[in-house]
Amino acid sequence: MTRTRSIFRCSECGATAPRWAGRCSTCGQWNTLAEEAELAAAVAYPATTQRAVLLAEVDGDAAAPRPTGVGEFDRVLGGGLVPGSVTLVGGEPGIGKSTLLLQAIIAMAGLGLRCLLVCAEESAQQVKRRAARLGPLPAGVWVVAETSLAGVLAAVDEVAPDVLVVDSIQTVFDPEVDSGPGSVTQVRACALTLVRVSKSQRLATILVGHVTKEGTLAGPRVLEHMVDTVLTFEGERHHALRLLRATKHRFGATGELGLFEMTDGGLRGVPDPSGLFLGDRRHGAAGSAVFPAMEGQRPLLTEIQALVAGSNLAMPRRSASGFDGGRLALLVAVLDERAGVDLSGRDVYVSVVGGVRVYEPGADLATALALASAAVSVALPTDLVACGEIGLAGELRQVSHTPRRLAEAARLGFRRALVPASAEAPNGPLEVVRASTLLEAVGLLQLRRPGNGAAGESGARPPAPAEWPRNRAPVEAGSIAAATTE
Ligand code: TYD
Ligand code: MG
Image (cartoon, rainbow, N blue to C red; front, side, top):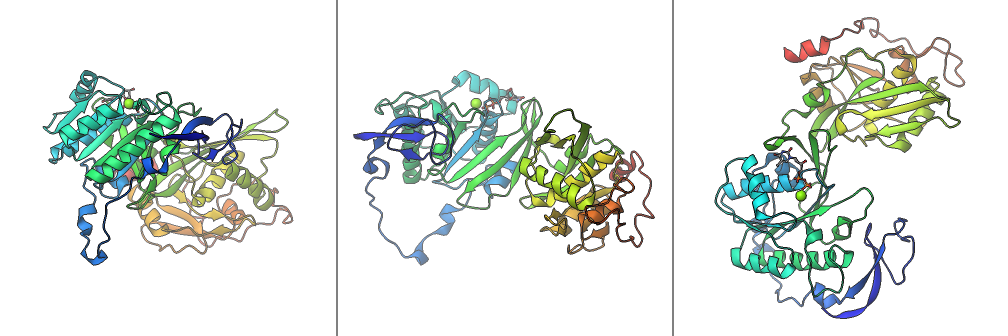
């Protein structure tokens, strides 16, 4: 390792600066710059001995993903792990990263792969005890409790695995690197070596990286550009639900969501997530709307809840959980200006149930309806789903995959869908109701106080709906539950 000069690297975004500063000039985070010795480029990328080959003669199948045997993990990876690839799995401590990867290793060993687990944080005995909770242990799983990089490489040489898991990259260190264990320099240097070894030995490597909310550990973010795939494992530690997403994936799409439930016997894939999210829904409560979201290729029904409460704050609270705060402010303004729903002077809370995050603009309509419903204490019909984006003029815009969203809603027993007038949505299993503006939607659902018209419309009534909501069934507790069990 040749030391040339010192540079300062941000532990959040990985940007470098020639001098220390209190704030990273690239990402704006405070106190994230740490000194490191600049690695000579030759160390990072050794001279290669690869020859140019004809593309037509390259065996593409050699880079085909191999299933891990953990269904939800494979879904997120787009089929499985690619030999020679490096995957970073990030998440807060205690969320279940070690459990997930141990399960994946056991499943892959069951499929005949040689797997080596470097447990730099736990002893081999602790891993064994954990494995015992997860089921029978097949042959083909090696474990080494090692923190030095040289020890890890020696174990790789000895075992010659197909799959290497390093749990975690922050605890592995290289004594030759002039920096303390866990520092940005160490983490980067060790990861670079492991990336090189993976590529040259066609080893599928998974690195575990802890992320803390405070970002105090050398964040996995500095590794993101080095690896092929970045997965984040998240969820509330006090809830059983865990979500796995890809934020970067060189070999496939990043939109897929993997869903797990933490049980006494490890992580279980969740086969019917919509059912799970709607399981505890209270029927007939004001401030609740159901949005058929798309997570990658999978429709997922989520409940969006809103609460509007009197406020004695000079600046009333606008609080969003699982939903974008800026988007909430926009919806509150559009509701007020364009749909006659006045939320000024009141605290507003929006929460997406089940620890899910919904950042699609398609959730606008359901969120706005939940807010309007909470504002006037009138429940939305329990068998209704709503999807559509809301523009600043209060117009409703269609979102992608509307038919698939509605099909999932129908499968779960919903009977009606409120969609933008332009939406391509067949009147199939669901009765499709269309509205072209938020004002019209709020009027259709009778969510406005009498005489409380939108600005400039002085209480103008929305266009009379043809068939609906005259035949709207009264809100009946349990009507969806009954329909779902049919
Ligand atoms: P762990 O995989 O150690 O988290 P991480 O590696 O991300 O720090 O998971 C820790 C939590 O999971 C711990 O609170 C115990 C719980 N757990 C179960 O509920 N069931 C299980 O079968 C296992 C192995 C762990
Ligand atoms: Mg762990």
